[in-house]
Length: 358
Ligand code: IPM
Ligand code: MN
Picture (cartoon, rainbow, N blue to C red):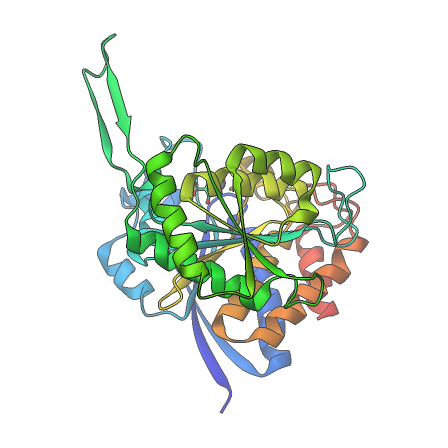
């Protein structure tokens, strides 16, 4: 009997449903070609549901989501809802409750895609950022006193436990060992660069350095490097070819992965995974809901399709994931641009192209 997987699909808001539809088209083509079954269940989480019911995610839905093999998410957000409600209520809640402690974001320049970095080729921008995804400033600890007065005082704490750092670090070393540039046959060694700000965040430095050295000692085949986060931004623009695998804390990771996305041609191509290696992982295009392009069949679905490729790999269907990735790399050179409305194709046509190539 063919292998089967249960996927929870969360199309979300704005252009989310449009890009996820193309992603599902490609996933179905991959399932057919590689001989496995995908059983999809759609959940209407997001802004529209919140406005209708006042509910972000119910405990019952959360419990259901925990029974799936993976989650495929479009985008969540609504300009009419106060910032923070949906982010904390849906996206971050899912990440925390499902303990998706790694955010995996490949920075990959596909063939034919124009990078804003002059002269950079696909082989120059080909690295992966591993962002700790549950702790740090996102823990939500702090407070404000004398709010609304001129004496107001706000505190937002960056919090990490040894265990949180260690499990993310182990994932990063394993990833660098398996998927580093040497393992992929494109470089002399596998490298893991830790990115932090040890000259200022000295307490975090003590903890992260200790874990980096301790776990790193178990991986003599992975070269360790360290860069400050500000310098990293500069290198990501000037010399992206120096990076292989990067590991960093949550907020720094949030910021540098947007920069990485820009260098790889924008949010239309950038995919990411919220990973719990022992639980349910969630894959998403990292762009937002793009309200101005909603319903126009103009948004770029490549990022969503790329997230689908990551989802397949996480299910253990590596050849299928790699084939989807290869089909993307054959499609991008045919596109005029990766920007919405300038692709030379509609959203659905790009999905068709990738599915047919596959
Ligand atoms: C991301 C987003 C989220 C984050 C927001 C929407 C809470 O920017 O996935 O990078 O900060 O992680
Ligand atoms: Mn972000």
